[in-house]
Length: 339
Image (tube, rainbow, N blue to C red; front, side, top):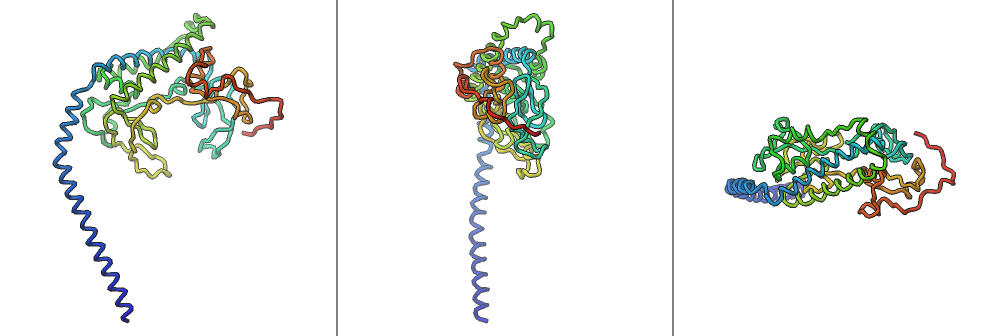
């Protein structure tokens, strides 16, 4: 009986000690909360005063150069897509530049319930080469954080245009009209017939040059204007702080409860490279799965410009593309693939 009483007394003493320790952090939290309430007006004034310093006049020419290079990039890529076909997989995000798709088993779509399947190719578009990235359009940098119930009150615009708008290259009220006019370049078949075949290499060179100008300009803008990207779903927000729209983790196996995990955005977050398998002149007409260690990779834009005749051997993508590398010997017996 005494042994049982001793156990009960020890349990009560431990619970009382835990309760005494638990009251101490609550007091600390209350003091911290009071301090935050006291300095909150100071933080708001600093944010408003910082917004008055933008846009920085020295950075406005950089934003305007980005817009010009982006227009040239969209126009030149539209011309190249008329001459060189681009294919995309029906079930996953794989893209290939060529008339016939490759036979490399890298399809990992959850619809097909398999990891290493052959791709089923369908015609692609410009959005498969230049991946569109959108963000919320802010009226000014000092406005409040976008709540979840306010997500339909703000327009979605390309992230590059939103960044250039905050940099002072586009008026905030004209950004939607600018996106409608310049984001959908059209070229007719008659215009394509008027372009000689030998001039396509110059179109590819101009597209490659515009691609590099856009990325170089964005690298400069991101040093001045803050942008955020979600670590999980790659949602982009151009502004000093991310929004609170619960759009992350929409699948059942993702237990994020819709909240984004924001971190500093980079150039690849606003302009994804979209790396694809690149077919070189020494490679076979159709790339096979057994030669995947021989083939090179390149961004879809660079691969498209290379097929047009643009020189890419002196660019930073040459090491990844393996222009002088060996090709897979087709003399070996290749087994049949099953879809």
